Image (cartoon, rainbow, N blue to C red; front, side, top):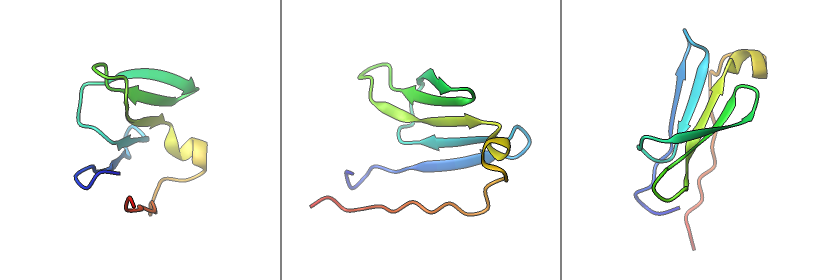
Length: 74
């Protein structure tokens, strides 16, 4: 992961939608399975993020804590 790359995670409790974003771009989406979308940068087809609809129904609860290990490149 480059030094300036960031992961943005947000949860809309009213809509029950989780957003994970790696790029801040207008993205094209592809449904991977029901309610789970991968978003791609249309310019270079790189992964821009994920959207998960009905998050609490899929995972049994709304998110309270998210833990993501980040590793510095060698």
